[in-house]
Image (cartoon, rainbow, N blue to C red; front, side):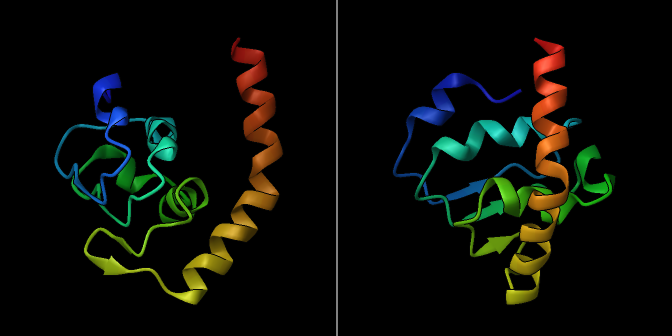
Length: 99
């Protein structure tokens, strides 16, 4: 979904992608190459209803300060860390199987 050109803007700090029919959480992985991304909106996309949505996004993009116009809290970071530790291996195994 995300065009490769988008990920070439390494200084990008704010990205509004709400209401863009993004259906797979894995699409967010492509944004991990944006080290300065601090604010991201994804609400209004089908992925918003996925279990662990916020934790997944914050595990992929730990530098975010704001997600969907809501500040990232310490609790959000703890939950993202727990999500990463419990689901990270499964995700890697799934990717290997898909390749």
